[in-house]
Length: 316
Image (cartoon, rainbow, N blue to C red; front, side):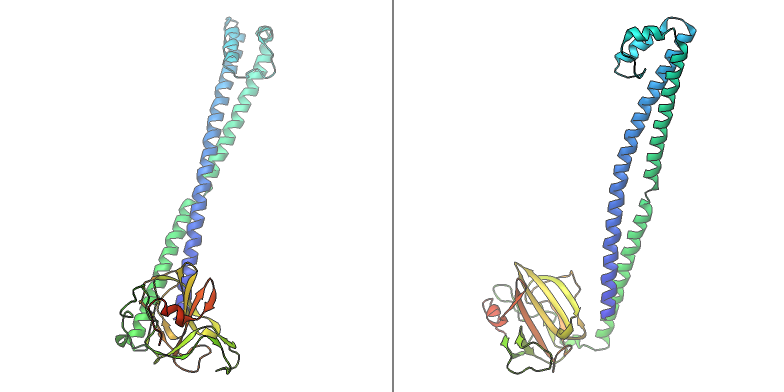
């Protein structure tokens, strides 16, 4: 079961990566398209300038008197067609120098060709961004998540049908909630409280007990203390199979020693107060079937009994 959960978590991580890559590619392509469009405009301007320069040259060669007027109009439009000429007096001298005009026209034509090449290269860069491939990666990743979730759900169904956990005997919720919207995490009795441990139940466990132990038969249902989001669900060292729920405002609750196959929620899942989230076991550093229940405030463990009592729940 834990392997299937890990597979689902990996599939979801790959989906997030694929979606991020697609978003980045779309953003990059949008920027590249803007650049290409600007280069297209510049190339078109360069081509108009080159055509004007060529027209001026032809007018001068034909000697029909149109060259001076063409050059004057071009300079008046703000275009630097003749690259370096200071005014109309030099333009007048150039009208009789067809060779100089031909050189200018050729240079402008070369500039226009270069601008076209830059624009073409920019559009090639746009086309080279494989948006379709990134979209396909997202589709595949979504399929993998769906398949992994189906496998996990199927495994949970098989566990129920094989009666590895007697789900038919487990209530689907904790029953009556307190006025503050909190519920008892399990129907059991307190066997160990919060605080120092004069006698360790097992070698290697902490001398300070961070939670409250509630004894119950293995397979007994475990319920969310109140609304929240699952931030951990799976094996966790001496805690054995473990669930941690974030309730907001720095409050979180933890549920340890759940039986194998008894973690019934996923990381990221939202749960309601009193919702069935697991089943009691004796995994990790445990001497028998019980729930180790923790309350944390800003990550620091606190005594669960007075905390829950203030919220209308008597842990017993």
